[in-house]
Image 1 (cartoon, rainbow, N blue to C red):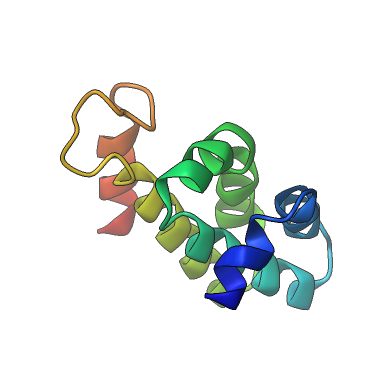
Image 2 (cartoon, rainbow, N blue to C red):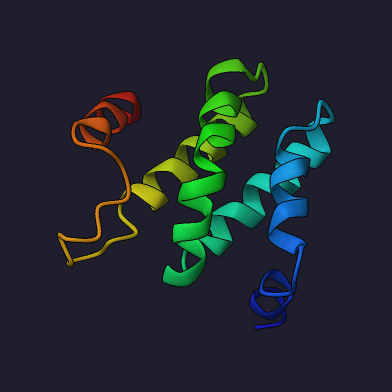
Length: 105
């Protein structure tokens, strides 16, 4: 509950996204975990989709640390399903979710 309230404070999500772009592995781990947690709430998931998906993709593709890559992939999967059962709430472009599913396999 405290984590959710902290993530809603002004500027915190921007700081998390900045940490995601850091070269420091610890910063990346903290940022990815925060993004995964934040993606659980619909109002934050749309913000992350707009601002953090590119960073998560970059971390997945470029990181040499397997833990970071796996957690970035988890974050992308969570964002891909953020629309839940409401089909009108597509988080990714057409076909992107299928590509993501293939990467998970």
